[in-house]
Image (cartoon, rainbow, N blue to C red; front, side):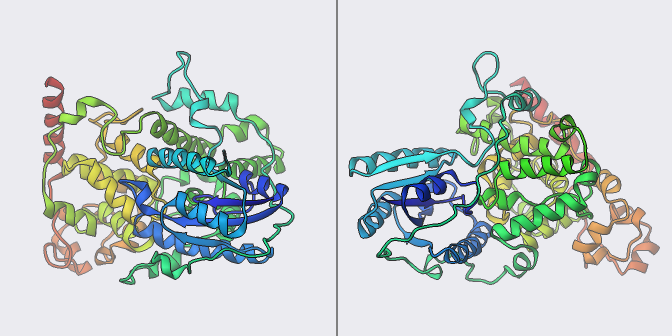
Length: 478
């Protein structure tokens, strides 16, 4: 039997249930169909397309070491899968499930089309530890608070060994036609991606290297180091997880093995702060599945009437990292250069946008969607709604991250700011977080002229906080 394995965001060979089933059944033809129109409002952004180009190239190279190859097609998924199946005589199509609203609708339609044409079609789990519909509260409804959600998950998560790569991948006698990778036009036409290439290695080899480095050098201090943006205290596995180059089950097993190797008890590794962050990823997908309107609309309906401002100049300054607020600017410049931003800083820059500038969280979510290499609809939506105070288990609206105190607490020496805002490099640590309050002599010694080589703040932090809180109170009074 010849089986098409329809690959999407599962660009790996190990722990891949659909690929394993196909390999055990006979000949395997791996296929990737580029169909961004089928993602509705959320086709992959520029940074994601860059990552996808390199991840597909890495996967094809890996397949060729096993006598196989990756078939690339462009067009409607159902039509391309049917055409590919006819060209190579496939009788079955298998794939791993996705959980975005548009993907669920598309996959259902594709399955119906394939079966109507006489092909077998089957989907498999693999992107999450638990399927979104498997976790319910005592009333049989979806959770909207993380802690009880994760507590329930921990009672349900099974711990089988991740699936090994298939021992072999039998090739068809005649390969179907394939488009070239370059013809998919995933790479940017204006080459801004040098920073991405310097920072990342897309593909399973890059994912494995990141995981091993994290386990050896950062997991032990993760609970504290994860909040310090100047330190390599996080795993940075999020883009690899998003593109399915590694699975949460592989990470789960690796963390367990790391603790067991050090003779630490099972309860300790299951309660690890890092695995709790994997739980937040599960929670985000749980929310998106049960509340599919949330990428564009607030979960808390009362926020639909919140009086957002409209200020294109302020939004542009935020995008470019030219707000005059050092920690915010550092984060936005890190994002533009590397396609990534430290999670603590993500919360700060998001809070600044939606509370100090009072600009819609949806605008920030779309900018992140286009510029993050780990842009994931579930995580992006949950993060922005959390910061805006309008989502599940959200930060109270009155929790407004002060970028000055956040910088003083988590980047006390200013190392992170100095890296990404070199104009301020000469300022001492006590001045770098709020240069507008620095003594004129300190500014002059550092070569900083506010309003010339570094902008003055585009908004007063204290006054804008008070304005935001007043707007929130007005909304509540209706």
